[in-house]
Image 1: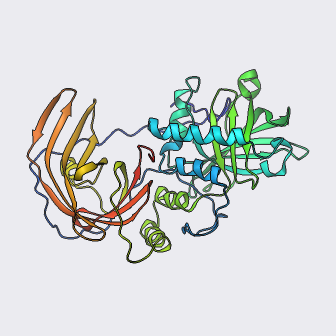
Image 2: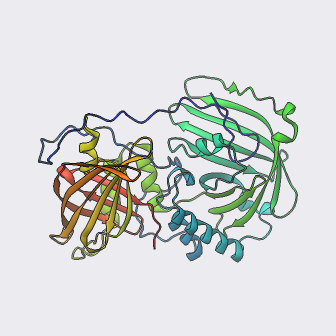
Image 3: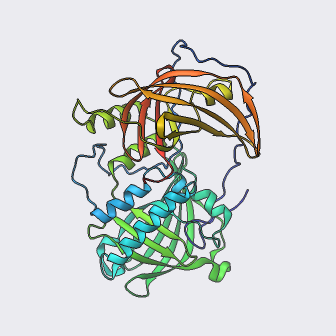
Length: 407
């Protein structure tokens, strides 16, 4: 098993085996029809697991924001990015980079390393992936089922910076600590010196066997804080390996909503609360917004036939095009993908009639047509530029996030 380097030099963790994609089921002709309701399965999700019990539980966007307009632009750019940046599209990365540069140019708290606002626990929300970062580091940070934190305590007799990986509330966490010192108003110097697992099922800590003393300079690094918000809720840092980090203490309601989906429990209740708290005028109509929408959760498990799942929008991406054009896309193995096109037309205030009837399995320049049809009513329950909640095929509830940027 490979060692994992987290957030800077000297943070290692051993991961388990990577699961391979499920083997496709039998290919067969499928005509969508109403089927008996099945017992709701365990919710499916793929977003960052945020665990901040001290954070407000409300999912309402109506409360006053702890962020400035420019900070909200960065938060907006982060909404919907999976794997803390690992799966970000080029458009999403451009939006984040632009928002980061604007904040760094504005400057925040001067001499952030001397400010009490930098102290405390920060959650890693986004990180870039420079060519100098190890592949294992990129893989680990992008695992949405884990939470990654950084603790900064400089104004003590023993100043330290610690990186924490929380596996789950049931399993526990790994904490890797570093002795820290302040070089100047922006830069923190650190050297990792100890690490341990804290498992919930054991009454003692398990030391992590890393020979920090023998690693020499490999266990050392530095971290510049290029922006610290006036409220101390948002921080941008750049590391000695060229990586940019976005960390937060307080989160946006939509981030909290997506974190519930990531955790995978209480999703139905969270959806109801989120929709209710963000409802506008009862007479307002919701519009299907154009763009590329990745499905991250559904209220029903996939069937045995992957091609049936794909044709009914139970997996993959939906691309909403102008002039009533709609496409379902599912990436398969070895560069192959399933694609199905159709149309949508508005049939009510928040409903659309969807007819999908042109499917194919595509490999490079070649395509194998499939005789598939799927007709259903799509009802919009909530939609903004980043998140869409809808009720679709067989009255299944879906949550999609937009992956092609806001523009």
